[in-house]
Length: 444
Image (tube, rainbow, N blue to C red; front, side, top):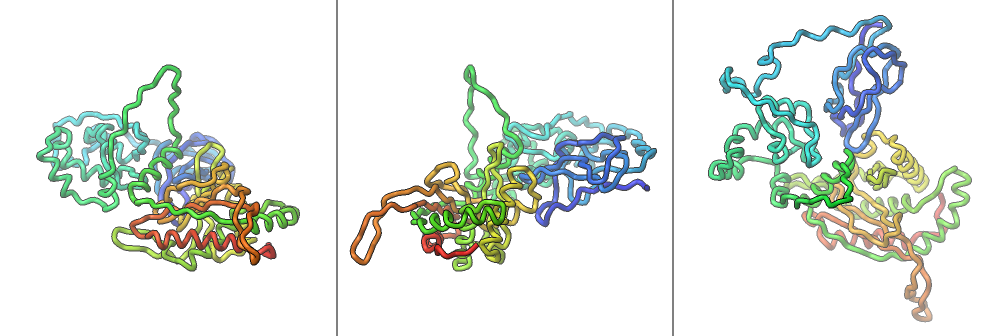
Protein backbone atom coordinates (compact mmCIF):
# COMPACT_ATOMS: atom_id res chain seq x y z
CA UNK A 1 0.00 0.00 0.00
CA UNK A 2 1.13 3.52 -0.66
CA UNK A 3 1.71 5.88 2.20
CA UNK A 4 -1.39 7.79 3.32
CA UNK A 5 -2.04 10.70 5.62
CA UNK A 6 -4.39 10.24 8.54
CA UNK A 7 -6.60 13.32 8.89
CA UNK A 8 -8.43 14.58 11.94
CA UNK A 9 -11.96 13.41 11.12
CA UNK A 10 -15.09 15.56 11.12
CA UNK A 11 -16.75 15.05 14.50
CA UNK A 12 -19.94 17.06 14.12
CA UNK A 13 -21.24 20.20 12.46
CA UNK A 14 -20.23 22.45 15.35
CA UNK A 15 -16.77 20.97 15.95
CA UNK A 16 -13.90 22.67 14.11
CA UNK A 17 -10.86 21.63 16.16
CA UNK A 18 -9.60 19.19 18.75
CA UNK A 19 -6.72 19.00 21.22
CA UNK A 20 -4.31 16.08 21.02
CA UNK A 21 -4.39 14.51 24.49
CA UNK A 22 -2.19 11.42 24.17
CA UNK A 23 -0.69 9.31 21.41
CA UNK A 24 -1.45 5.61 21.93
CA UNK A 25 1.01 4.40 19.27
CA UNK A 26 4.65 5.20 18.62
CA UNK A 27 6.33 5.74 15.29
CA UNK A 28 7.19 2.35 13.80
CA UNK A 29 4.35 0.52 15.58
CA UNK A 30 2.17 -1.83 13.58
CA UNK A 31 -1.53 -0.95 13.77
CA UNK A 32 -4.71 -2.75 12.79
CA UNK A 33 -7.67 -1.17 11.04
CA UNK A 34 -9.94 0.62 13.54
CA UNK A 35 -7.31 0.33 16.29
CA UNK A 36 -7.14 3.61 18.33
CA UNK A 37 -4.11 5.73 17.47
CA UNK A 38 -4.54 8.87 19.53
CA UNK A 39 -6.82 10.34 22.19
CA UNK A 40 -8.33 13.74 21.40
CA UNK A 41 -10.53 16.19 23.26
CA UNK A 42 -13.24 18.45 21.86
CA UNK A 43 -15.11 20.73 24.23
CA UNK A 44 -16.17 18.32 27.02
CA UNK A 45 -15.85 15.03 25.14
CA UNK A 46 -12.75 12.86 24.91
CA UNK A 47 -12.61 10.42 22.00
CA UNK A 48 -10.16 8.41 19.89
CA UNK A 49 -9.03 8.52 16.27
CA UNK A 50 -8.74 4.99 14.83
CA UNK A 51 -6.43 3.72 12.09
CA UNK A 52 -8.25 3.69 8.73
CA UNK A 53 -6.51 0.42 7.70
CA UNK A 54 -3.71 -1.97 8.62
CA UNK A 55 -0.19 -0.61 8.39
CA UNK A 56 2.81 0.95 10.11
CA UNK A 57 2.63 4.31 11.87
CA UNK A 58 5.44 6.05 10.03
CA UNK A 59 5.29 9.53 11.52
CA UNK A 60 3.28 11.52 14.03
CA UNK A 61 2.77 14.99 12.58
CA UNK A 62 1.41 16.60 15.74
CA UNK A 63 2.31 16.37 19.42
CA UNK A 64 0.46 16.01 22.70
CA UNK A 65 -1.23 19.30 23.54
CA UNK A 66 -1.45 20.55 19.96
CA UNK A 67 -4.74 22.03 18.77
CA UNK A 68 -5.57 20.52 15.38
CA UNK A 69 -8.17 21.63 12.84
CA UNK A 70 -10.67 19.18 11.35
CA UNK A 71 -9.20 17.81 8.11
CA UNK A 72 -5.60 18.50 9.15
CA UNK A 73 -3.07 15.66 8.75
CA UNK A 74 -2.02 14.22 12.10
CA UNK A 75 0.01 11.17 11.05
CA UNK A 76 1.40 9.15 8.15
CA UNK A 77 0.56 5.48 7.70
CA UNK A 78 2.49 3.08 5.48
CA UNK A 79 2.94 -0.59 4.67
CA UNK A 80 5.33 -3.09 6.27
CA UNK A 81 8.90 -2.14 5.40
CA UNK A 82 8.11 1.52 4.72
CA UNK A 83 10.49 3.98 6.31
CA UNK A 84 9.46 7.26 7.93
CA UNK A 85 10.39 10.30 5.82
CA UNK A 86 13.60 11.97 6.89
CA UNK A 87 13.19 15.16 8.86
CA UNK A 88 14.28 18.28 6.95
CA UNK A 89 17.61 19.79 7.92
CA UNK A 90 17.33 22.28 10.71
CA UNK A 91 17.23 25.85 9.46
CA UNK A 92 19.25 28.62 11.11
CA UNK A 93 17.71 29.79 14.36
CA UNK A 94 16.88 33.20 12.91
CA UNK A 95 14.82 31.58 10.15
CA UNK A 96 13.27 28.89 12.32
CA UNK A 97 11.57 31.28 14.72
CA UNK A 98 11.01 34.53 12.83
CA UNK A 99 9.43 37.43 14.63
CA UNK A 100 5.79 38.04 13.73
CA UNK A 101 6.73 41.63 13.03
CA UNK A 102 10.13 40.86 11.52
CA UNK A 103 9.69 43.51 8.84
CA UNK A 104 9.58 46.27 11.42
CA UNK A 105 12.22 44.89 13.83
CA UNK A 106 15.98 45.24 13.30
CA UNK A 107 17.49 41.91 12.26
CA UNK A 108 20.32 42.17 14.76
CA UNK A 109 18.04 42.74 17.74
CA UNK A 110 17.84 39.66 19.93
CA UNK A 111 14.40 38.65 21.14
CA UNK A 112 14.32 37.30 24.68
CA UNK A 113 13.35 33.63 24.84
CA UNK A 114 10.19 33.19 26.86
CA UNK A 115 8.84 29.76 27.74
CA UNK A 116 5.04 29.59 27.80
CA UNK A 117 3.27 26.56 29.18
CA UNK A 118 0.24 25.31 27.24
CA UNK A 119 -1.92 25.81 30.37
CA UNK A 120 -1.54 28.88 32.57
CA UNK A 121 -2.13 29.16 36.34
CA UNK A 122 -5.71 30.32 35.67
CA UNK A 123 -6.46 27.20 33.61
CA UNK A 124 -6.38 29.07 30.29
CA UNK A 125 -5.20 26.92 27.39
CA UNK A 126 -2.71 28.41 24.90
CA UNK A 127 -2.46 26.87 21.45
CA UNK A 128 0.95 26.03 19.94
CA UNK A 129 0.60 28.97 17.53
CA UNK A 130 -0.06 31.44 20.34
CA UNK A 131 2.84 30.00 22.37
CA UNK A 132 5.20 30.28 19.40
CA UNK A 133 4.25 33.91 18.75
CA UNK A 134 4.59 34.73 22.43
CA UNK A 135 8.02 33.13 22.59
CA UNK A 136 9.29 34.87 19.44
CA UNK A 137 8.00 38.25 20.68
CA UNK A 138 9.14 37.81 24.29
CA UNK A 139 5.58 37.92 25.66
CA UNK A 140 5.49 36.43 29.14
CA UNK A 141 2.94 33.99 30.53
CA UNK A 142 1.84 36.69 32.98
CA UNK A 143 0.98 38.99 30.08
CA UNK A 144 -0.99 36.24 28.34
CA UNK A 145 -2.90 35.55 31.54
CA UNK A 146 -3.97 39.23 31.65
CA UNK A 147 -5.17 39.30 28.03
CA UNK A 148 -8.91 39.16 27.39
CA UNK A 149 -9.33 36.30 24.92
CA UNK A 150 -12.13 36.32 22.35
CA UNK A 151 -11.90 32.60 21.66
CA UNK A 152 -14.13 29.90 23.05
CA UNK A 153 -14.16 29.96 26.85
CA UNK A 154 -12.05 33.13 26.87
CA UNK A 155 -9.15 31.47 25.04
CA UNK A 156 -6.49 33.86 23.73
CA UNK A 157 -6.37 33.62 19.93
CA UNK A 158 -3.68 34.57 17.43
CA UNK A 159 -5.65 37.74 16.60
CA UNK A 160 -5.87 38.72 20.29
CA UNK A 161 -2.11 38.42 20.65
CA UNK A 162 -1.33 40.29 17.41
CA UNK A 163 -3.72 43.08 18.42
CA UNK A 164 -1.95 43.32 21.77
CA UNK A 165 1.60 43.59 20.43
CA UNK A 166 1.40 47.20 19.08
CA UNK A 167 0.24 48.55 22.47
CA UNK A 168 2.30 46.11 24.52
CA UNK A 169 5.12 48.47 25.48
CA UNK A 170 2.76 50.96 27.08
CA UNK A 171 1.01 48.19 29.01
CA UNK A 172 4.26 46.58 30.17
CA UNK A 173 5.70 49.95 31.27
CA UNK A 174 2.53 50.75 33.16
CA UNK A 175 2.12 54.03 31.26
CA UNK A 176 -1.51 54.68 32.13
CA UNK A 177 -1.61 57.88 30.11
CA UNK A 178 -0.80 55.97 26.94
CA UNK A 179 -2.49 52.67 27.51
CA UNK A 180 -5.83 53.87 28.88
CA UNK A 181 -6.99 55.66 25.71
CA UNK A 182 -6.00 52.66 23.62
CA UNK A 183 -8.00 50.32 25.83
CA UNK A 184 -10.97 52.64 25.64
CA UNK A 185 -10.95 52.85 21.86
CA UNK A 186 -9.78 49.37 20.93
CA UNK A 187 -12.62 47.50 19.18
CA UNK A 188 -13.68 44.24 20.75
CA UNK A 189 -16.78 42.04 20.81
CA UNK A 190 -19.71 43.37 22.82
CA UNK A 191 -19.80 40.30 25.06
CA UNK A 192 -16.13 40.70 25.98
CA UNK A 193 -16.58 44.39 26.76
CA UNK A 194 -19.52 43.59 29.01
CA UNK A 195 -17.57 40.89 30.79
CA UNK A 196 -14.68 43.26 31.51
CA UNK A 197 -16.81 45.23 33.94
CA UNK A 198 -17.09 42.17 36.16
CA UNK A 199 -13.39 41.32 36.17
CA UNK A 200 -11.78 41.37 39.60
CA UNK A 201 -8.60 39.82 40.92
CA UNK A 202 -9.13 36.57 42.79
CA UNK A 203 -8.35 36.75 46.50
CA UNK A 204 -5.02 35.30 47.55
CA UNK A 205 -5.34 31.99 49.37
CA UNK A 206 -2.75 30.63 51.77
CA UNK A 207 -2.41 26.92 52.36
CA UNK A 208 -2.65 25.88 55.97
CA UNK A 209 -0.90 22.81 57.37
CA UNK A 210 -2.72 19.68 56.24
CA UNK A 211 -4.45 21.36 53.29
CA UNK A 212 -4.45 19.40 50.03
CA UNK A 213 -3.81 21.19 46.73
CA UNK A 214 -5.79 19.58 43.90
CA UNK A 215 -5.34 20.72 40.32
CA UNK A 216 -8.52 20.99 38.28
CA UNK A 217 -8.75 18.56 35.38
CA UNK A 218 -9.41 19.85 31.87
CA UNK A 219 -13.18 19.35 32.03
CA UNK A 220 -13.51 21.10 35.40
CA UNK A 221 -11.55 24.11 34.10
CA UNK A 222 -13.83 24.33 31.07
CA UNK A 223 -16.94 24.09 33.26
CA UNK A 224 -15.59 26.81 35.53
CA UNK A 225 -14.87 29.13 32.59
CA UNK A 226 -18.31 28.46 31.08
CA UNK A 227 -20.15 29.15 34.33
CA UNK A 228 -18.30 32.43 34.99
CA UNK A 229 -18.87 33.51 31.39
CA UNK A 230 -22.60 32.78 31.68
CA UNK A 231 -23.03 34.86 34.83
CA UNK A 232 -21.12 37.75 33.25
CA UNK A 233 -23.10 37.53 30.02
CA UNK A 234 -26.66 37.14 31.30
CA UNK A 235 -28.48 38.85 34.17
CA UNK A 236 -30.08 35.79 35.77
CA UNK A 237 -33.60 35.79 37.19
CA UNK A 238 -35.20 32.65 38.67
CA UNK A 239 -38.92 31.90 39.04
CA UNK A 240 -40.29 29.01 41.12
CA UNK A 241 -43.51 27.02 41.10
CA UNK A 242 -44.66 24.02 43.12
CA UNK A 243 -46.35 21.27 41.14
CA UNK A 244 -48.64 18.48 42.31
CA UNK A 245 -47.34 15.50 40.31
CA UNK A 246 -49.30 12.79 42.12
CA UNK A 247 -50.91 11.47 38.91
CA UNK A 248 -47.50 11.34 37.21
CA UNK A 249 -45.98 9.35 40.07
CA UNK A 250 -48.90 6.92 40.19
CA UNK A 251 -48.76 6.49 36.39
CA UNK A 252 -45.03 5.68 36.47
CA UNK A 253 -45.56 3.20 39.30
CA UNK A 254 -48.23 1.55 37.17
CA UNK A 255 -46.19 1.21 33.95
CA UNK A 256 -42.54 0.92 35.03
CA UNK A 257 -42.56 -2.85 35.64
CA UNK A 258 -44.12 -3.75 32.31
CA UNK A 259 -41.94 -1.23 30.48
CA UNK A 260 -38.70 -2.61 31.94
CA UNK A 261 -39.75 -6.18 31.20
CA UNK A 262 -40.69 -5.30 27.61
CA UNK A 263 -37.87 -2.89 26.73
CA UNK A 264 -35.07 -4.06 29.03
CA UNK A 265 -34.58 -0.57 30.49
CA UNK A 266 -36.15 1.74 33.04
CA UNK A 267 -38.66 4.52 32.52
CA UNK A 268 -37.63 7.62 34.46
CA UNK A 269 -39.31 11.00 34.95
CA UNK A 270 -36.79 12.78 32.69
CA UNK A 271 -38.46 11.98 29.33
CA UNK A 272 -41.77 13.21 30.76
CA UNK A 273 -40.15 16.47 31.90
CA UNK A 274 -38.57 16.92 28.46
CA UNK A 275 -41.90 16.26 26.74
CA UNK A 276 -43.60 18.90 28.92
CA UNK A 277 -40.84 21.45 28.24
CA UNK A 278 -40.93 20.80 24.49
CA UNK A 279 -44.71 21.30 24.46
CA UNK A 280 -44.41 24.54 26.43
CA UNK A 281 -41.70 25.81 24.05
CA UNK A 282 -43.99 25.22 21.08
CA UNK A 283 -46.60 27.35 22.81
CA UNK A 284 -44.07 30.02 23.90
CA UNK A 285 -41.30 29.95 21.25
CA UNK A 286 -39.61 33.12 22.53
CA UNK A 287 -38.00 30.97 25.24
CA UNK A 288 -36.25 29.05 22.45
CA UNK A 289 -33.98 31.93 21.41
CA UNK A 290 -30.37 33.10 21.47
CA UNK A 291 -28.78 36.54 21.59
CA UNK A 292 -26.27 37.87 19.06
CA UNK A 293 -25.29 41.45 19.90
CA UNK A 294 -28.52 43.43 19.67
CA UNK A 295 -30.22 40.73 17.57
CA UNK A 296 -32.44 37.86 18.75
CA UNK A 297 -32.19 34.51 16.97
CA UNK A 298 -35.40 32.50 17.18
CA UNK A 299 -34.40 28.85 16.88
CA UNK A 300 -36.44 26.57 14.64
CA UNK A 301 -35.43 23.28 16.25
CA UNK A 302 -36.23 22.36 19.83
CA UNK A 303 -33.11 20.61 21.12
CA UNK A 304 -33.26 19.88 24.84
CA UNK A 305 -30.01 19.44 26.76
CA UNK A 306 -30.14 17.25 29.87
CA UNK A 307 -27.43 17.88 32.44
CA UNK A 308 -25.85 14.62 33.59
CA UNK A 309 -23.39 14.07 36.42
CA UNK A 310 -20.36 11.92 35.57
CA UNK A 311 -18.62 9.43 37.87
CA UNK A 312 -15.72 11.92 38.08
CA UNK A 313 -18.06 14.50 39.62
CA UNK A 314 -17.98 16.67 36.50
CA UNK A 315 -21.02 17.64 34.48
CA UNK A 316 -21.90 17.06 30.84
CA UNK A 317 -25.00 18.04 28.85
CA UNK A 318 -26.00 15.63 26.06
CA UNK A 319 -28.73 16.95 23.76
CA UNK A 320 -32.01 15.35 22.72
CA UNK A 321 -32.48 16.77 19.23
CA UNK A 322 -35.91 17.68 17.89
CA UNK A 323 -37.48 16.66 21.17
CA UNK A 324 -40.87 17.96 20.05
CA UNK A 325 -40.95 15.40 17.22
CA UNK A 326 -40.46 12.37 19.49
CA UNK A 327 -43.22 10.48 21.28
CA UNK A 328 -42.78 9.36 24.87
CA UNK A 329 -41.21 6.05 23.85
CA UNK A 330 -38.73 7.85 21.58
CA UNK A 331 -37.81 10.29 24.35
CA UNK A 332 -37.35 7.48 26.90
CA UNK A 333 -35.03 5.60 24.53
CA UNK A 334 -33.06 8.74 23.68
CA UNK A 335 -32.67 9.78 27.34
CA UNK A 336 -31.53 6.34 28.48
CA UNK A 337 -29.08 5.99 25.60
CA UNK A 338 -27.50 9.42 26.07
CA UNK A 339 -27.28 9.04 29.85
CA UNK A 340 -25.62 5.60 29.59
CA UNK A 341 -23.06 6.75 27.02
CA UNK A 342 -22.36 9.94 28.98
CA UNK A 343 -21.40 7.89 32.04
CA UNK A 344 -19.04 5.69 30.00
CA UNK A 345 -17.50 8.53 27.97
CA UNK A 346 -18.91 7.30 24.66
CA UNK A 347 -20.70 10.47 23.53
CA UNK A 348 -19.79 11.95 20.16
CA UNK A 349 -18.82 15.67 20.17
CA UNK A 350 -21.91 16.63 18.19
CA UNK A 351 -24.15 15.06 20.83
CA UNK A 352 -23.31 17.74 23.39
CA UNK A 353 -23.74 20.72 21.07
CA UNK A 354 -26.66 22.53 19.46
CA UNK A 355 -28.94 22.62 22.50
CA UNK A 356 -31.57 25.36 22.62
CA UNK A 357 -32.87 24.77 26.17
CA UNK A 358 -31.56 22.76 29.13
CA UNK A 359 -33.06 20.81 32.00
CA UNK A 360 -31.14 19.78 35.12
CA UNK A 361 -32.59 17.36 37.66
CA UNK A 362 -31.34 18.50 41.06
CA UNK A 363 -33.83 16.12 42.65
CA UNK A 364 -31.44 13.28 41.78
CA UNK A 365 -29.31 14.43 44.70
CA UNK A 366 -32.23 14.87 47.08
CA UNK A 367 -32.44 18.65 46.58
CA UNK A 368 -35.92 20.15 46.60
CA UNK A 369 -34.97 23.11 44.39
CA UNK A 370 -32.01 24.88 42.82
CA UNK A 371 -31.08 28.05 40.96
CA UNK A 372 -29.36 26.76 37.81
CA UNK A 373 -26.93 28.77 35.67
CA UNK A 374 -27.92 29.28 32.04
CA UNK A 375 -26.07 27.11 29.53
CA UNK A 376 -24.89 29.77 27.06
CA UNK A 377 -25.80 30.70 24.37
CA UNK A 378 -29.25 29.58 25.51
CA UNK A 379 -31.44 32.00 27.46
CA UNK A 380 -33.17 29.69 29.95
CA UNK A 381 -32.75 26.52 31.99
CA UNK A 382 -35.09 24.57 34.27
CA UNK A 383 -34.23 22.63 37.41
CA UNK A 384 -36.55 19.87 38.64
CA UNK A 385 -36.47 19.20 42.37
CA UNK A 386 -37.02 16.05 44.37
CA UNK A 387 -40.57 14.70 44.49
CA UNK A 388 -41.72 14.64 48.13
CA UNK A 389 -44.91 13.55 49.85
CA UNK A 390 -46.49 16.57 51.53
CA UNK A 391 -49.84 17.56 52.98
CA UNK A 392 -51.68 19.76 50.51
CA UNK A 393 -55.07 21.47 50.36
CA UNK A 394 -57.39 20.02 47.71
CA UNK A 395 -60.59 21.67 46.54
CA UNK A 396 -63.51 19.25 46.28
CA UNK A 397 -67.23 19.78 45.52
CA UNK A 398 -67.94 19.32 49.22
CA UNK A 399 -65.20 21.68 50.41
CA UNK A 400 -61.46 21.86 50.94
CA UNK A 401 -59.62 18.85 52.32
CA UNK A 402 -56.06 18.12 53.33
CA UNK A 403 -54.47 15.15 51.55
CA UNK A 404 -51.03 13.59 51.14
CA UNK A 405 -49.77 14.48 47.65
CA UNK A 406 -46.56 14.07 45.64
CA UNK A 407 -45.16 17.59 45.25
CA UNK A 408 -42.11 19.03 43.53
CA UNK A 409 -40.57 22.44 42.81
CA UNK A 410 -39.62 23.67 39.36
CA UNK A 411 -36.97 26.42 39.16
CA UNK A 412 -36.70 28.45 35.96
CA UNK A 413 -33.61 30.65 35.43
CA UNK A 414 -33.71 32.98 32.43
CA UNK A 415 -31.77 35.78 30.77
CA UNK A 416 -33.46 39.01 31.81
CA UNK A 417 -31.98 40.85 28.82
CA UNK A 418 -34.53 39.15 26.55
CA UNK A 419 -36.90 37.18 28.82
CA UNK A 420 -39.05 39.20 31.19
CA UNK A 421 -40.72 37.90 34.33
CA UNK A 422 -44.08 37.51 32.60
CA UNK A 423 -42.76 35.08 29.99
CA UNK A 424 -40.31 33.36 32.34
CA UNK A 425 -42.99 32.88 34.99
CA UNK A 426 -45.71 31.79 32.56
CA UNK A 427 -43.39 29.26 30.98
CA UNK A 428 -42.55 27.42 34.19
CA UNK A 429 -46.20 27.58 35.26
CA UNK A 430 -47.22 26.00 31.93
CA UNK A 431 -44.72 23.16 32.38
CA UNK A 432 -46.14 22.55 35.86
CA UNK A 433 -49.69 22.50 34.47
CA UNK A 434 -48.73 19.88 31.89
CA UNK A 435 -47.18 17.68 34.57
CA UNK A 436 -50.12 18.14 36.95
CA UNK A 437 -52.56 17.18 34.20
CA UNK A 438 -50.75 13.96 33.32
CA UNK A 439 -53.24 11.25 32.38
CA UNK A 440 -53.16 7.88 34.12
CA UNK A 441 -54.11 6.35 30.74
CA UNK A 442 -50.98 7.61 28.93
CA UNK A 443 -49.47 4.77 26.90
CA UNK A 444 -45.82 4.02 26.40
